[in-house]
Length: 203
Ligand SMILES: [Fe+2]
Ligand SMILES: [Fe+2]
Image (cartoon, rainbow, N blue to C red; front, side, top):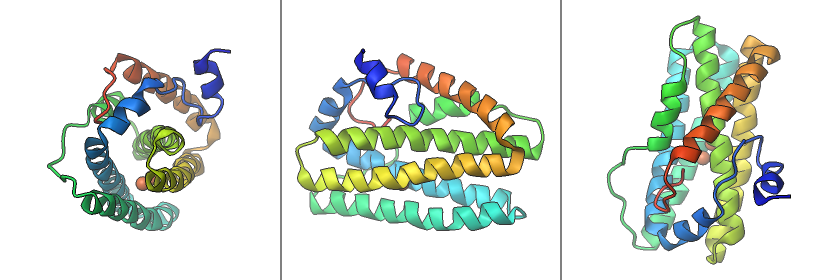
């Protein structure tokens, strides 16, 4: 069994495992990784806030996402603690190539519920990939404190991944979600395949 096959079973349905070289390069660029990670957490919180504002009339969505905003902001705070205690830089946000590419796949138009599904599935995908990368960091980097930190975040993001998928199923039904989810997974694998391997980004 190739490393791709053996890893695939353990990674939340993602179609392409992260290149095993990534974690080694990332570890050498921890300052960039932590900085990028802080912005990932900020974007996760912001994205949930946007959904709450846009779909304020969907009680179940609002009540489900409200605590996730707090959790993501808690993650941001924890990453910032790591940055501060290590005396690292917290610079301005950089273009997130990965997220920009995923946005391009989002189908515009259609019903409001269709738009919601697209949004939830894109969020689920980012959670799944983050979870996979956190797991790699937790298992491979030398810093024991960061191993534990990334392990805890991995568990949390895995929960969010499930929540986003469940929310989409709640509003539009499992058939539609399952079919479109496969398309998202395939597209995401293509995005990663085309992106150059770099250790200064979480994705
Ligand atoms: Fe998070
Ligand atoms: Fe998350």
